[in-house]
Image (cartoon, rainbow, N blue to C red; front, side, top):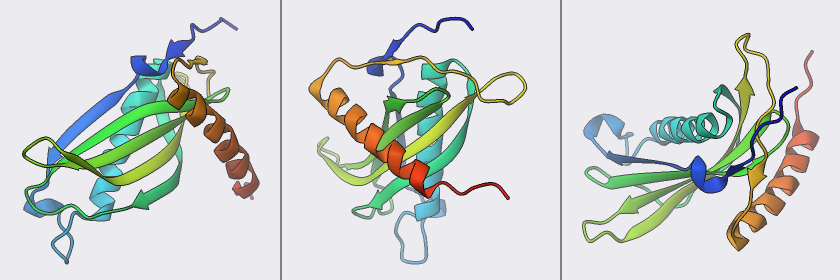
Length: 159
C-alpha cells in the first residue's frame, strides 16, 4: 500500500455562498432545512474530495444543529473544514452563517458529517493523515475522536 502524504486542514477548506430565494423557503417563509442540509452535504463532499483526492460518499450526518433561521434574500455562507480522519473515513465540520450587508456573520447551523473515500470500484480506500497546526484544530481532533467512538456505539449493524 502506498504511503499517502499527510495534508493540512487549510488544504481542503471549502466555502459556498448562497442568497436565499423563494424556491428555498418552507411554509413558514424560512430557509427549508432540507435545502440547507443539501448545501451542507455538498460543502462537506468538496472538503473530503480535496483531502482524499478521491470520490467520496456521505456515511453519516452527525450532530446537525439549527440555531437560527434564514429568510428570503439573506446571504448564507457555508464554511467546511476537515476535523478528523480515520483509515478510510473523514469527519468534516460545516458552519453556516447568515451574513448581513455590512459583513457581520451570525452562526445559524453547525454540522458534522462523516464521508468515506472510494476507489475506482466504489470500495473504501485509505485517506491521508491530517496535519494539525492550531489549538482549534487540535481541539477539534480530540473532539472528533470522542464523536467517532460515539458513532461506533450507535452504528447500525447490517442484517
